[in-house]
Length: 274
Image 1 (tube, rainbow, N blue to C red):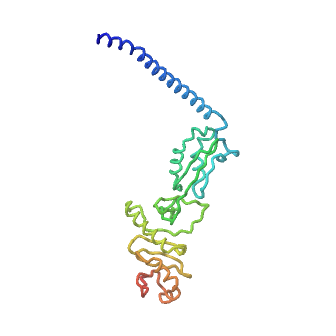
Image 2 (spheres, rainbow, N blue to C red):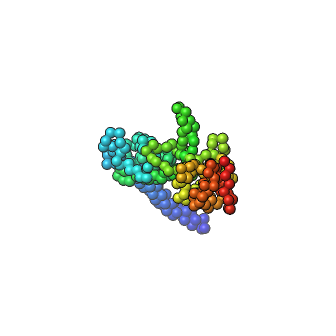
């Protein structure tokens, strides 16, 4: 009797299982169809974004100029032609395919560019915000074809910057960062220079030259009346020692009439070394 009931029960379970499988199959089919329709709709939308002229970055109004729709902010000394060249291939293309990250990397490869933020602004504009490097000094960069000394600019990270002829920089010449130094030595000397310039503040504009060849005995050169003198400031108390000379330069130069180099490291006296 028990076996007969079990057999009957098994027979009754079959339609329920069939309905479950039919439901699952229908759900899967619906998901597949929905996915296909979603992909198709996205493909149509993507195609429209790529082909519609409304989203195309237009060319410049004047030949040889960059597109007015690529707006660049913060550019002062970076070479305009190099910045414009970064976006040359994007003119006439859809903003949808504009490679934001790649263009940022392209901009950072330009010497003067320290940071770059690149944004797509719909329907067809690109906004670029540049942060340029700030030169702190000129450094000798070898001789030109005419034998004259050439100079490059250097920033606080040790990056060499080609001078911009249209820009005037009131920064000193920096000596002692020659190519013979390894990277660690250059960074150490540059940190010392930055500390000196930070300490002396606005007085840095009076310095024509900073010599860090001997890091423990840093020297600065400046005009004092009709003379040019070099001051040995050492490796500390830069501001106090420089200000001490400037406040008393007339008296100091009277007592050291022929001196070209003055040691300012002692508190109670100035020593003429040359």
